[in-house]
Image 1 (cartoon, rainbow, N blue to C red):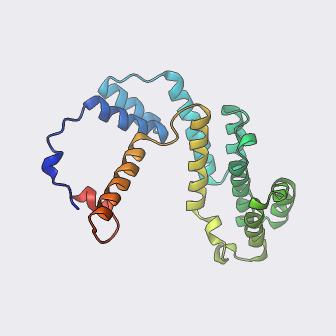
Image 2 (cartoon, rainbow, N blue to C red; image 1 turned 90 degrees about the horizontal axis):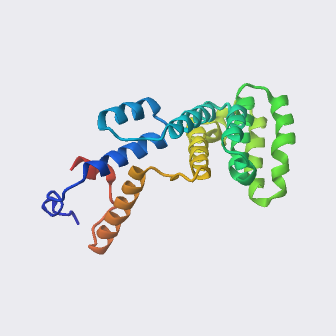
Image 3 (cartoon, rainbow, N blue to C red; image 1 turned 45 degrees about the horizontal axis):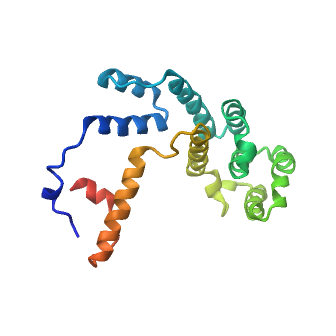
Amino acid sequence: MDVDPRLYEQIAVNDNDIHNIVMSYLVHNCFKETVESFIACTGMKQPSDHLEDMEKRKRIYQFALEGNALKAIELTEQLATNLLEKNKDLHFDLLSLHFVELVCSRKCTEALEFAQMKLTPFGKEQKYVEKLEDFMALLAYEEPEKSPMFHLLSLEYRQHVADSLNRAILAHANHPTYAAMERLIQQTTVVRQCLNQEHGKDGPFSLKDFLKS
């Protein structure tokens, strides 16, 4: 079911609400320079300490995205004390990034030693056993990029870990873990999918097509 645009085109949208949504997205994704420009253009106020934390989060995010997990861990422990100690899943994922970087650099002996020292202890819990097996299997391939576990070496995997780390740091500081824009898109998608199902419309709701309309 397509909603008649006439039903919502006349609904007034407050500029401040739009500004807050945009600001939330920029802050969440650490676009510090853009945030400063946006504040200057709109006259919005943003605490200076929030901007300082944003710069720190940006550095951590970039290190994780680049695969420099040990530096990301070091800075995370400075910014969010005990976060990784309490979030073992995230800690494991970050350590695995460093292991992958060693494998990709063909430092297999160093990778094995690192795994035995830092990753193997996680194997005491069943939920980590399969993950450990997948990572360790990379050592069996001369070209791990062509192995069945090639996705663990991908930018997408690093981005997934970096995004999870960013959200965890935000939660640790009692900030929203998702930008308001993301939440609005998620809610819009769910509502439209429900409307499609109720009215028997074939196919899933396409956000891409909706934005083009």
